Amino acid sequence: MSDLKVAFIPTNVSGVVFYRVWQPYNAMLGTKGIKPICWWYTPNQIEMHPWENEVLDSQKGSSIQYDINAACEWADVVVWMALHSPQSLALFREMKLKHRKVFLTEIDDYFLSLPAKNQASPYWKPGSDMVGYVIDQFRESDGLIVSTPYLAELYRKFNTNIRVVENVIDLSLWRPHHNHGDEVKIGWVGGGTHEDDLEIVKDVVFELLEEHKNLSFHFLHGVPRFFRDIPRIKADLSFRSIDKYPRWVMKAGFDIGIAPLEDNNFNRGKSNLRWLEYSAMGIPTVASPLPHFVESIKEGETGLIARSHDEWKYNLKKLIEDKELRHSIGLNARKQVESRFSMRTLRDTYKSVLEDALNASLHAVRPGNASSGVDRGHELPTVVGS
Image (cartoon, rainbow, N blue to C red; front, side, top):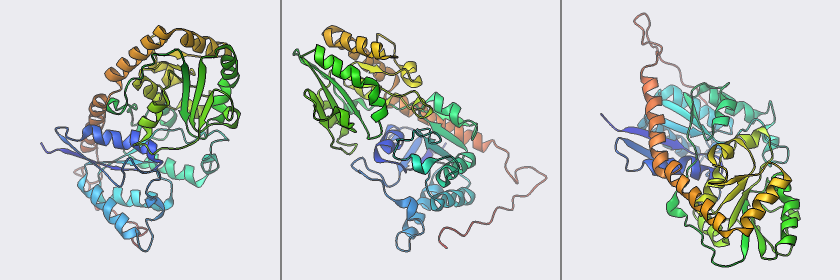
């Protein structure tokens, strides 16, 4: 039996592509029975290749069309990330009609309910063109790949063939943190759209700083103004490409990680990635009670859940004052990541998803397969290359 060939077509921001495309690609490299390719991406990219808006460009369009056509011709299964332009959606449709391969769409956020303060929300309003493109892509795909069970339920109305492939962590990129002193650092890392999320712990942060003179807080990248220029709060507004990201976070030397998230549909679809990264460093996490955190964390063993101001303060205070508890929870969390959220797990899960999708396609009833009909094919649209 020949190898199963999978081609990944990335879009979105570089960090998302790393976890949702580059890691699956890497996990399957060298795996018996499967050959992956990943088009136009390396982890040192800060911005993605703008191919979605250059499909019809007079100079660059022909090269883009040639590459994607070649990838679709070669592959058995093509995994596309969510598309954002009419040109890229038209190319998706043309490739599907031309090559008759299995097309899956990868999505790891709930784009249909973005909070108002999210920078992308103006583009994803109900009824917007962007929403229309992604819904059409979902409906026309042979299946969806999502990062959490909650996302699967949210998107099921657009495509019933949905598989959950959880995010994992490459432990070769992360090393455990060891604190031999009395100082305690609580840390958070994230983008610039989390002001409302960090409001959840704002008062707790200031109260704990007042009560614990050996304590400091470290916020990386998307730091709201209320945490800037405050004694014993380090606000690092810089940015790192994903290949430099683990070393940057580890250098901050967190002893405890926090993952506060507001309870809304967008956040409910989010994965446990922040817990994974903290756990990879062998440090305990205190997280909001959003679905994937609750599903992943064994409370008191591999992390702590905080449902109120009082619980945030109590859990953090307990970890600040008990170094052995920090070490125990952090060690257990890293072990859980090793056993359930490893690159090996990702390889096996993704391979199964691809094989199932291909087998379902091979056994599907298609026009022309029945003895009473003849497959006359389809005329290709004239958008691409016209």
